[in-house]
Image 1 (tube, rainbow, N blue to C red):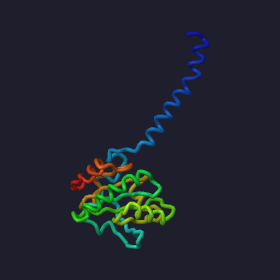
Image 2 (tube, rainbow, N blue to C red):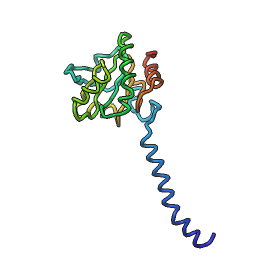
Image 3 (cartoon, rainbow, N blue to C red):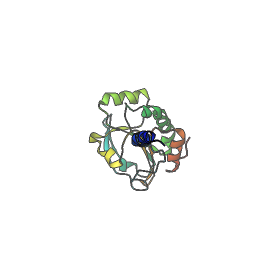
Image 4 (cartoon, helix red, strand yellow):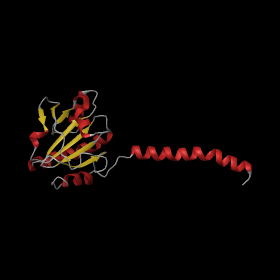
Amino acid sequence: MSGRTLANWRRWLPPVIAAVLVIMLVAALTRPDRSGKAGSPLLDKPAPAFTLRSLDGVEVRLTSLKGRPVVVNFWASWCVPCRDEAPLLRSLSETQSDQGLAVLGISFQEPELQKARDFIRAYALAYPSLIDPGARTAINYGVSGVPETFFIDREGIVRSVDRGGLTTARLSEGLRRIGINWP
């Protein structure tokens, strides 16, 4: 290699390496973990208790659902994957509530409650949608973004966590871990 070629190579190598590292970092941060296990200190531990009010003003306590499997879904009206998974959760609640399954939605960082009400109406969600003032419950659950879904068994233990929009297969897997066969 000539001196000039070597100098050019040395000059371009650090920016190329930096660009590759930045691309890898961005890819890692923007691709949610779909395994359902990684990154959740709650897995196989008791679900943090909460008492929240629904958008209708009804108080809901997680402890009152002990003995039933529970799906807790953190969502927001501005979240596109939340919109994609809403029909799945509606179908789940319609077909499994008579089997003892409880489905709860928790509105996450919703700037206007009317938008949350509009979302619920648009997707005909009949399960309770709860308000989390100050995001205290989301913090206790380690929610880092929406949607995130927690699958809690009859004993109140978190058995699976799903980050990102649910698919039928991933919803079925989370449900299987809490003793529910669906669809």
